[in-house]
Length: 310
Image 1 (cartoon, helix red, strand yellow):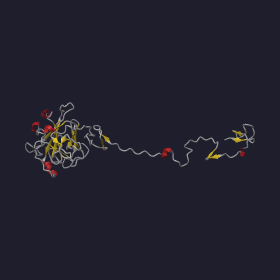
Image 2 (cartoon, one colour):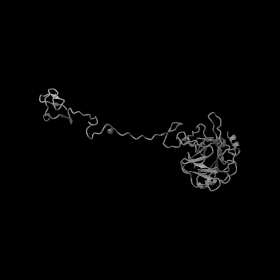
Image 3 (cartoon, one colour):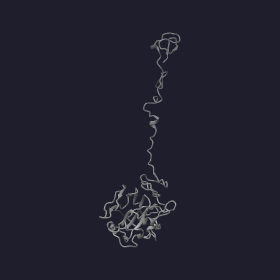
Image 4 (cartoon, one colour):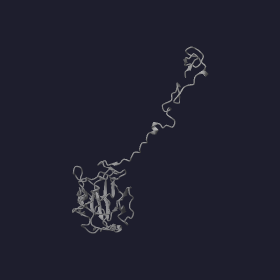
């Protein structure tokens, strides 16, 4: 702060005038001028934030808070359709988000099915070959043996239903197959309104992929399961998923309406459905029970069956 000597000189020194050398009386100095609440001439190094009025929010504090990011949809890597977060399958093409299994070619479709229903549901065609068109009546105690159902004993439509070719048009190899039976004993426990078809020899379906879907064909939902159970009204469109590590098979219920049941070949029929979501390992003699009358047996194919369905 500058001082004023008795001769009117402004001096930076406060004891003697640095112009004329006269002593400076500190008590005779004029009061400092005040402008805007600040002492004029005072040396201050206050920052710009210190000059803000008390209580005034800073620019950062006054900025609106960023909105929380909205959940992103689950994009199908196959068809790029956005699905709800946590979806198990793509609603458009059927891609399996859990196992990464690609959907079957919609142009191929399961053999023996014609999409003729007005609501887009598929009905069995003339060549579908329902189980029970030939052979003796099978019961749950005898019809589930895995070594007796060969290629020659399958219905005429079984080979068509087991279709599947590789990218070059050649038939895909397989080591496992599924037998689909009409089980009258299971039908009796379900109290279904629809009449049970006549039991007979099973429909044979080669399992050509490490992950296969059990369900009913739906054109409107683009659902084309590898194990087609469209003839059973108690089966959901996406009923259950079968997966394998090469030596073992696992079943997962996909939130079906009537549940998925697992039980051994010998013993009473299962009464409790497996939980939705977790995978359940299948033993060698386990059977799957779904819908109103369907029993599914997963087993290794014999060499003759591999050749017959190649």
